[in-house]
Image: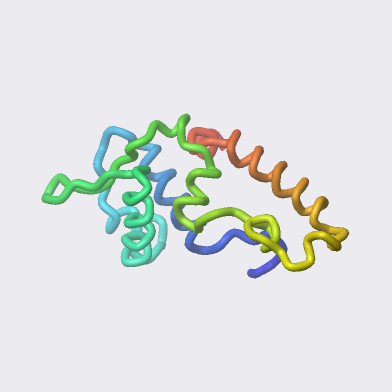
Length: 134
């Protein structure tokens, strides 16, 4: 379903991955097992895990006892940081993230700016710990 402010499959799968890791923070977890349990493609999780590793959110360990673990405590990891690590910067409309040719004349710019500030504030306040507590 694609709709107003819809969450991408990539972000949803990434949050599922992080929630699974946060549920057992001291145990390295296999992406294969998470993929099977959550009915998500292992290859897709690998792709997402690479982005999260690059941002320092998770770490990986190879070998028979290998897998992935959180590199950040769940209560310190904001949903804003998760979204930006997986999807990039958050901009509801292009003029909120970059320059706009009609910004000086646009009657909606301030409205979208207000909505975006409130959204970012909420996402900064929510953490991975909140995901586990819901």
